[in-house]
Structures are given as structure tokens and as C-alpha cells.
Amino acid sequence: MLERKIREILQNAGWFEGRNVDISGYVEFLNEEEYFVFERAADFLTEYGGLTIQFENPKRLGSYLHLTIDPINAGKSILRELSKRYENHCKESFVIIGEVSLMDMTWYISSTGAFYGGNDDFLIRLGDNFCQSVLNLISGEEFEVVTIEDE
Image 1 (cartoon, rainbow, N blue to C red):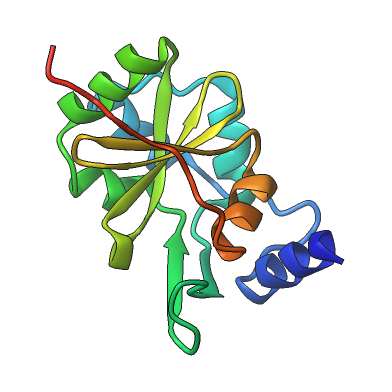
Image 2 (cartoon, one colour; image 1 turned 45 degrees about the vertical axis):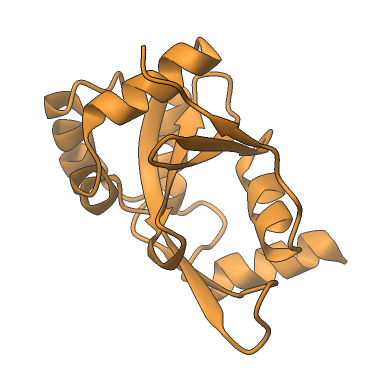
């Protein structure tokens, strides 16, 4: 049932099995910003890049949030130094992949395939994979918020 809900949300955003978009512009931007675009990140962006995923805000029924998978726009909204602090805290590489702008939350994929949401000094582990992360977000999951201290 829930997997069907995620699939429906993704399909409404334009996703389909076998989707494959050109990510050369994303990779060029990410390299310029000193992100290491590991294979999991490249595969994710190839399948989901350019989508805007709309879902009902679980905390305010009747209003909607949008997860936009666009590392260029998301990357322009934060300083790379901030995401480096997230990487240092988690001891793994991150690639910025998008944002939920109304929540001021940038989204990242880690080198282990987990997804994180960041906002300034705060970081949330959203889930072990993309579908779980979306499911956790749309279901109103209570996340542990970690404060990332300056180093």
C-alpha cells in the first residue's frame, strides 16, 4: 500500500521505470562546487534529476510541499562549507541533490546511499534510501535533529 503511494507520487512527478536523464550539467556544477560525484549519486540523479515531487504536508493538511531534485538550484542556496560540516560529522561524502524550499531543507545522498536533510546547523537522517526517505517525510515521521557544531 505505502510502496504504491510512493510510486504514485513519483509517477505524478514524471518518473517512470527506466528514466534516464542527462546529468552532465549537474556533474559539472557539482565538480565546480567540490563535490565528489560518486556512483550512487550519479545513478540517483540519472533516474530522478529534474523531478519536482509534490506531496501533502503531513503537519498542515490541505497544504503541499515540493521536493525539487535539482542540485544546481539547491547548491546555489547554501555554502559548500556547510555541507562539508555535514560530511565531517557523518564521516562520509555527501552530494547535494535537491531541496524542499518551504522547509528550507536541502537534501543530500551520502556515499552509503542514505538520505539527509540539512538546514543551517541542523541535520536529519531521512532514511536509508530514497523511497524510505520520501515515505518518512510524507507520513510525518518524527526525525532526530542533530545540531552540527562549528569545528
